[in-house]
Structure formats: C-alpha cells, structure tokens
Image (tube, rainbow, N blue to C red; front, side, top):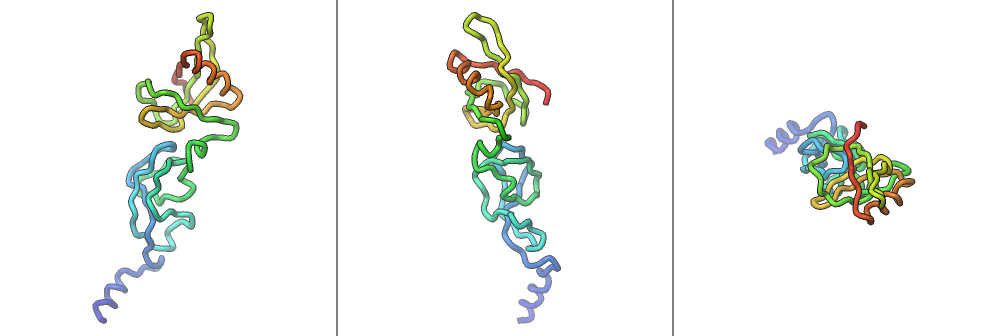
Length: 159
C-alpha cells in the first residue's frame, strides 16, 4: 500500500492523469502521411480534438515533431487538401522530386505545335506513381483535354 501511494503521488501532476494521444515523431508537410506514435500526456494539456490512434490518412496542414495530432491536422482524402474553387488532378509522376507545396504553371502544346499556358497549379500530395495537383476548377477541363491529347508540362513558379 505504501509503495502504491508513493508511485501514485509521483506520477500525479497538477494537469491531470495521463491520457493516450498521438504525437508526431517527425516534421511533416500538408499532403504527406503522418509519422506518429501513441504516448501519454497530462489530460489538461491535450487538445479537445486530439486523436487517440495513429491515423492512416494525409495531413491537411503542416505538423512539427512532438506536436499532438488533432482532427484539424488530418484530411479525409485528397479533397480535404483543396481550397474552395479548386479540383485535384492526378498526373503521372515522371518528374524529378518537387518541393513540398510547389507552385507551378500548367503548359500544353496545341495541335498546331504552339504552346499555351493553361493556368496555375500547386502540388497537394504525392503517391508512388502519381502527383496530385490542385488547379482552379475553371481550367480543369482544358487541363484534362491537354492530358488526353498527349500531356501537359509543369513548370515551377514562385508562390
């Protein structure tokens, strides 16, 4: 009984008993998978929307190592990474590695051999064989048509 009392007293904190939460084990950018582990943290120091199991989805926002993972950090899918008025297009990953959150110009070659600028895009997620780019919904049909005709070119641009 005395040992139990001493252990209980030394693990108690003014912030409450420990609860299990998910904490990021490395810095990660939006659009990537979260690297995390379950750890104990004092109850009063845990955000109300903290998750308690390591998620399999993508991050909707950047996270730092040691940060508690909350539901706000997680996207339920690629669509959770889009801004209003954007759509996501899957592009075969035949490019050198791109910087996280890369901003790009979408270029296409017309049937007469001239080039045209279709609009802007940003990298939202990468998969082993695909890049997901977000484009304004207004240019999505033109980008899809250019991809069907033989492809598009993505040129890095400043943010």
